[in-house]
Amino acid sequence: MTTPRKIIIDTDPGQDDAVAILLALASPEEIDLLGVVAVAGNVPLPLTEKNSRIICELAGRSDMPVFAGCDAPMKRKLVTAEHVHGKTGLDGPQLPEPTMQLQAQHGVDFIIETLRAEPAGTVTLVPIGPLTNIGVAFRRAPDIIERVQEVVLMGGAYFEVGNITPAAEFNIYVDPEAADIVFKSGAPITVMPLDVTHKALTSAKWISDVKALDTNVGHMVASWTDFFERFDTEKYGSQGAPLHDPCTIAYLIDPGLFQGRFINVEIETTSELTLGMTVADWWGVTDREPNAMFIGSVNDTGFFRLLTERLARL
Image (cartoon, rainbow, N blue to C red; front, side, top):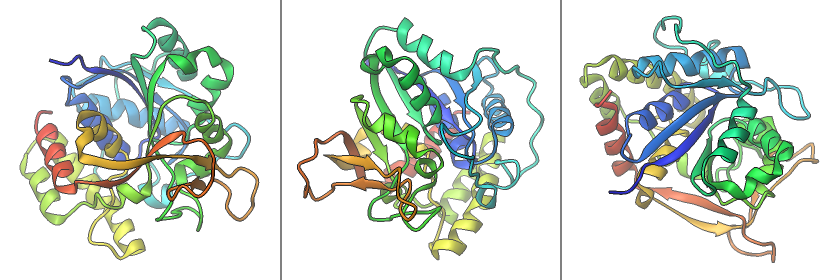
């Protein structure tokens, strides 16, 4: 019996963030969620911290500590994505107001304190929004970097290029300076880029399977997926919508579902044209040191089977 991995989820919910958090909460054998830290991203911070609490309550976990982190990128104005997720970030079904309290401590302080308090190499950071909180924590407390077990993040793209600009994926684009700090930090990094998340597309069958669970969580996830699937099928002409963020948690539960390469990934921070681009040396054409496991493919059948099976527990 392996001990569950201690993780902190750093998030800007977002319907797919919600599914990632639910998957973590439904998987106590593999995942020990220490806390959820909200960041400004898909929608502004007052909504992402509120949405984080709504999701924990939906899973019956009002005991889960939820923190508010940074409300703006390190050096730039906030760019948001209401055009994808709706004005609340969790548009779709009507959601009750959360009753659980937000923690008083700042999310960045929680990240720093937790990494200092837990044994070195036992806490994994799972940022599924812009990397602001992690970048600020690493800059403010560089001693924590070598204590991180792994950073498993959703962000970036190489073959799929960009989804917010022609060259950049949203999470990296919103705070490229923070992403640059994280990628240059020396911490072990695993990246779930659009290259893999666009291979994990929802289907009508999967949505009906989730609806058929006939639970609060099942109905909610089905409605959320229905909502943002409309945007993606229109934009990409695909059959379904990519479930970006749950790929991080699925990887921690069953890494065998994913394949990638350990390569060099640099973040563009100065170009007007390609700001926020993840320049991934997939073909090994530079002599730059590899710094990230860049995931390229997923067993989508296994991924959706895992999701359904775990969501059924909530």
